[in-house]
Length: 448
Image (cartoon, rainbow, N blue to C red; front, side, top):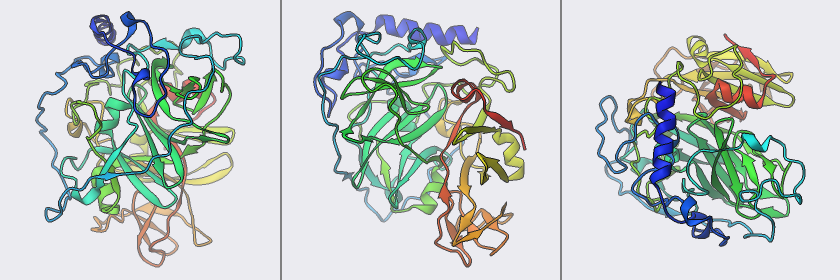
């Protein structure tokens, strides 16, 4: 019954919405032909179209929502909030190619990598869930609007780390950003509970990404604005269109609590609510979705019976190997040493991060913890790790047995002989089982 309600909410909102296709107006995108007037959805409508796809209830988009179980943490009251704009590397602009959004079966394309009949409409039109193309940031220690346990996405490129609060990402799903000379895309899919980052440079092309409004395996399908090819968010591959078969370079990204991020990165940049759109940031539009007893929205595949479809797992994909670790089991151990693709990895779990997909207020979500995956090597020395039983004020929640150095959840040594050393991050996914099993059917399940 609950799954039927998810679907009815999406259908009703889609049927009542109207407005232009945002591809013609979105910042940084070249104008392309609009969809018919009857098919569009205005991204600035008072209804929040992204949430309509899977929410059992639709809240007022600007409603004030009390947070009952969390506190704002860590900001310096002596510092004024700042506003920082980052110089962006734009895409190359719309090329003279056939759009896979409008004509996915065009004969000029190479063979599609997926069954086109399984790319399903999630409700909104292209960019009806508006990506962020001109991100505005502020310094972490001036932020007074994120609760301690709220999840943020932490991305480090060329030594710089930034945070993208999930309370913003859940309404926009994509941020086109730039770190120095590296153009990146940060993506978050609420329906499959996954966050990934990629480089936007494709050899002789630089692209920007938009939301297609479509799903594959109940996962975000993106499109690049330069060729309007469609890409799977989950593995960063163009599956239909001019660029079919092209793969993006994945960048390791981590979901962790705001408290952990702020403690380790007080002067890092944090994406702000200044997005150019009015949304109920801090509110979960997919209230009740993180329920292991329910089915994924618009998932048309067969679920692998080894785990429930919406079991939370940590997915690690390296080379030809793929592994899934159940965080609830990992939590009791704290640290797990495991091999993936013949390489020893160290997997860590730290309590204190709320799920963004359970309660109406994101900060009220149950504690699902944060995970880090690393190559256990520093300063030319192989290391073995264990959880620290001490509540270290410097955030040193893990300790290596060889030197006694303490490490935070982001893999940085914060005390001891190896202080200042950063472990090499391993790209991983905090996601639902059905999604990893659908994209990587040969995945091994590791249940510590």
